Image (cartoon, rainbow, N blue to C red; front, side, top):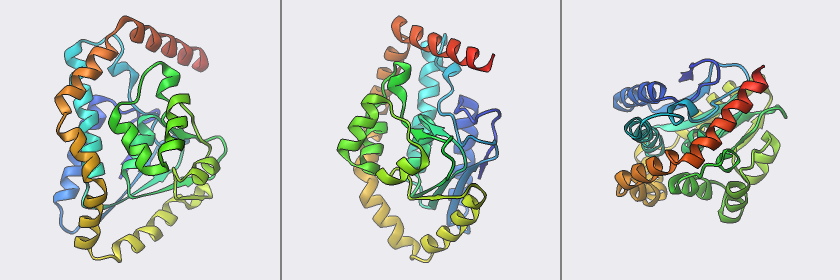
Length: 243
């Protein structure tokens, strides 16, 4: 699956909705056993959640947007397919979250690319299920430091802490992902799926049982004046950078 939402595959409400619909179709197609997610945008896998969906929007809109973010994570993290992220560019925040929902991660070896949950840098807080996902990936202490400082890692640093599983030359990301997929698909589906469910079910159940409360928390947090101000400062900084 190629993500193509120029310029940076921001996870907007429309994008997330379309992503989930396509995911559902693949999930129902019994002939599809594996999924490789990559980007058709140069230099970026996904820049993460679309700030414009959270800035200056009504509480209702923010709630609808957050439900779509939850849906993407729930569907990807619990997918019956073998999933591989072919990370061919930078992948901060929500892009990193999407990568971590996959069974396996391969990243392009380019020091200009980075990956990580950098929410605190924007004055926002990664919710508990983002936290649980990164703890499950890199362990508690590394996750604690990374989350509190909003760290972004280069491909080699990400490999060292286990945030990605392989780092390969840029032009080999997709071929490596295809080769890795044969290994994942060599395992009988039912055995792999049940094992994946055993590993991930506690984390999934935690969000499933508190989705509404999580949406309420997000909406009351993101609509605070101080948080809206942080988002405005960040958007202005982005404008200056482009300028």
